Image 1 (cartoon, rainbow, N blue to C red):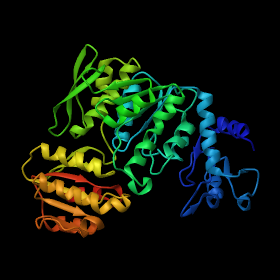
Image 2 (cartoon, one colour):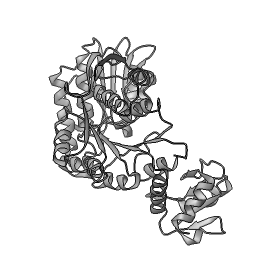
Image 3 (cartoon, rainbow, N blue to C red):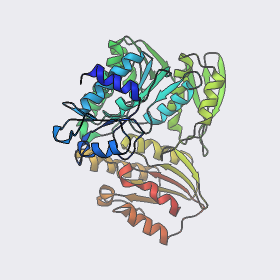
Image 4 (cartoon, rainbow, N blue to C red):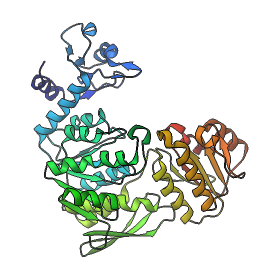
Length: 430
């Protein structure tokens, strides 16, 4: 079956799934493969659960005309997503970055939804599978698309751009994330800037934080049509008003001046807010609507959340962690100057040969900032030589046992670590 014929089936059914357990009736099932699974083996289950057709790439699983045999299911899914994107012909904004891209994506989407019928990346579906799925979630009523793009190896952003073909783009920042896959910080810079490279080819528009030297240099080198924010000469500028519990900022949009009282935690979210303001302003969304959209956005999924438990005030930011994001979180927590403060930090994963050195840098930062109540969780932190007042735990279960036996109350607690450490599970003990 050729791509156009498959697209005809998609247009008829308008739903796709890659999980045979989560099926929308009459959807198309794409039998993807991974290191530990073969979707072809679940094609029959998908059909029995209500899918209309199963797209497979192993002939032995084809039993009747409900099975559509292709050479490579993933490639077909990506080509179908790109084909659909071209048929829609709508503006698409691509978002990437080492830190803050999901929060920025959520804020931008909240703002753009004030004017457009919007479709945007759900959860963390930002890779070679998630991007085509996001595109295929759009329909004839969709007026604007926002596509998040993540990467953990070279050239991945370029590949995702070729699928989504964004005409607009923003890189939130470039930091030390996924060093294991990239090999060096320089390779991270090259990969993230692939979004701007694509925007240049498309003669599109790039948005960027003027205060970020790396991004500013990249924009200038490419001579890219751009909209900057964050400097006093930019159309959109902002300053932090308050970081007590939640972040409040004052903003300027041209001649308009206002305040935003967000439900986000941390001064580092200022640039994410300004990105959403800048993009909303560019697409002619009224300032009051921009402010309303940002103020009503509630962070979730263990990102920049302020939780008031029965015993403590907890900042939960345990969805992901890398040297840049941990440094920002720790410095922000230190700036609050709260008494009875506790730090719970989990290992930063996927740092490769740089892992031990980067964790040691964080420990030195904690000492420099005079933190005393520190709990470090994970194999790397557990192996380091740290001040005697710090507590080290091999895993989160050991920490939970300690917390169960040692009551922490009337405290301010920052929880920050990579998702694989599962620090979010300790909240019930706080």
